[in-house]
Amino acid sequence: MTLAGLGSGGAVHALMVAVAQLEAGAGEGSWRMLITDDPLHNAVLIFLALLSLMSWGIMFSKFAEFRRAEKHGRAFVNEFERASGIDAAMLVAQRATSSPFTVVFARAVQFLNETKPALGASPDRNARLSGSQVEALRLVLDAESGAQREKLGTYITWLATVGSVSPLIGLFGTVLGVISAFQGVVASGSSNLTAVAPGIAQALTATAAALAVAIPASFAYNLFAARLNRYDGALEGFSSELVALMVRDGRI
Image (cartoon, rainbow, N blue to C red):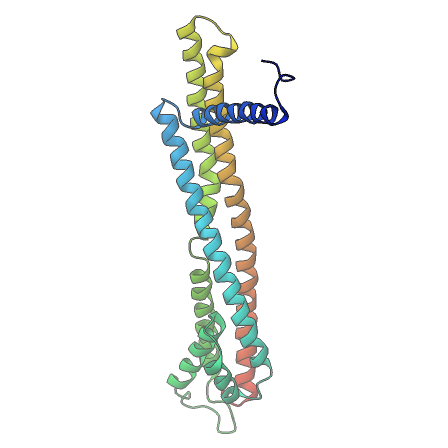
């Protein structure tokens, strides 16, 4: 029966059936390119999929962590800069949501409370601590800032690892696909497209999968590394402002 012999409803139905059959065939072909009879090829794709899931999990987690730390840290620093003295800054820290800045501030106050005035200090001095003790305070603040930076940067290096290792894993899958293509030529005794197409499809699929894993991971690593460096600089500047506030307040 020709299309003209059908009613308008029958023509539309026939067209929809044809499209569905084409889509089913294309989907089945795409699935066969992904999952084949070669266990090594399947293992490569599964491993790349696991690496992708891990990297995206780290990306979403670190994005939320950086956003939270920057938001709470910015709010605390804005109020800290308006504090008239160390006592007022302590009240601000008590009200503020915990962040790396509040942790560094708490460590400075702890050092100040636990350190006794230096013996033999000049009687006309108003400072409680000697120059060596102030230097020790700076070292403590630097160490605490570094610890907070390391905590914030946890798992970021995994993104760099995924970005550098995924192409090599994909290359291994590509080699397996090329080997499969040559085996198809040997098995069929011909080098036509039908013989080499499955192997070439495997090779290109592995390459594409590796790039799909490596590119987002590398991009995210560079982005988070830059944000981490900026945050480290902000913590260093805050430590200097904290020491300056203690000097103005006569605490050191």
